[in-house]
Amino acid sequence: MKASQNLKQILIFIILVLGLSYLIFWGPVAILKLKTANLVEGKVYNLPAFIFFVIGGFVPSIVGISLTKIYDHNSGLKDLLKSAIDFKIGFQQFVIIVTYPIIIGVLQLLINRVLGGTFDYSQFLKQLPSVLPLIILGPLSEEFGWRGFLQKRVNFEFSPVLGSLVIGITWSLWHLPLFYMLGTSQHDFNMPFIPFMISVIFSSFIYTYVYIKSHGSLFSALLLHWVGTYIMQVIGSQVTRSATYNYLECLPALLIGTIFIFILYKQGTKKLK
Image (cartoon, rainbow, N blue to C red; front, side):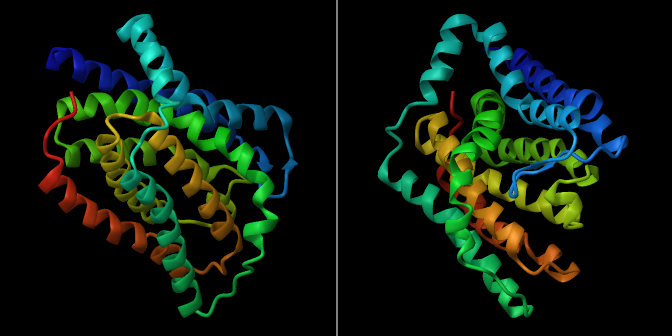
């Protein structure tokens, strides 16, 4: 693939994902202040707004699959779908996928405890029924775009570190309307966007490392997103939130992500063609 064509595809993906989310789905819901739903409690407040909210959540994967079909044709689309069920990701990658969200969660709970907060650990069992829906609302709705389409191209165009920044910035900006949308945890918990952006950007370095080391397996990203989404949902919905905690919440991701920056710089500088 020529560099100019590859860069063009990257820009088209980013423009479509942000444009559709901001102008068609999430943006209007946020501007009109329509309350969507509480997914933890299973409550839907406004059905049309909820439908737009859900469809908006699938924009990255819809765009990623559609552009793969256009640019890579049927063979590329087939490879993308096969990659989503490529379970041979390696023991090291599996350990990182499982332990990274757990370590992040433990450190966040430690921050919560130091700040005098409380936490109901039984919620990890009580919210377990949400595990199956979460494979759809998060991993499947996003990863065919972030890793399935975008990661493949930024790894071709840039170094793993710079490519991770491109994905992380786009990924976090895509979430921005949620901070103004009634009913989302970002809005209702008064979460500041900058710490969230830091968490997403620095987590991108771990995703890139796992993706490269698993030889481009989309399943590795799906599994990491799945485990991380569940743990972060439980913790995010139960910690004692304060302005201080909201800003310190990103610290674990920043620290671990920094470690992986050095690992990628040292070991992963070879672009994934």
